[in-house]
Length: 208
Image (cartoon, rainbow, N blue to C red; front, side, top):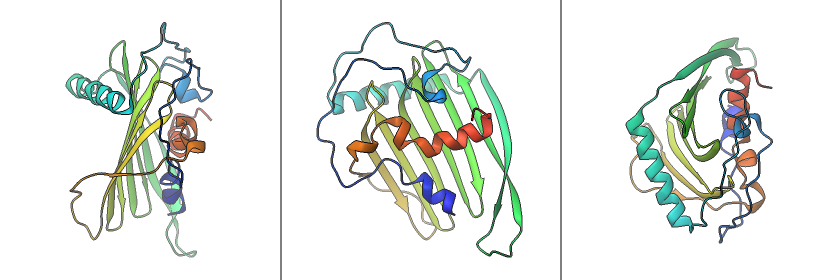
């Protein structure tokens, strides 16, 4: 359960990011973030135009729709077993298979999808990339009678501009509007706010 709690704590904070800042493009230092699936560094030839948060979110939704039409293709799957003990100190360590798919959808889009399991919890993490840059992360999962959906929207410099959450308790289906979460300016970069997701993917892929 400790691991599960870590996965939910990355991007939020008490401060509000009121403006979207656009800088020149940088290459991230995280392996997942700065390389294609073939291991080669990828840098865009030109900068994207500056967009408002609403314009960027709409752009992301358009790209997401294109990916849904493409479907998962050109994928490689890798798995690794993690052992986790139950709530009791006397309980045995049980095996849980962790699975990651890495997909080169076409020359523009890539998708990394991880399915992670533990004692009484499960989570699916989908990381969407365009031209080597992460633009959207969608997370679904649950623990016992609690379930959730997290949506992370990033600008062209991979900084978080919107974080939406939808949750349900007592085994109910997730429904209703999303709740927008305040963004901590110190944790808005994807390498910080999505670090725990990357760590789980790295565990399976053996990149760390």
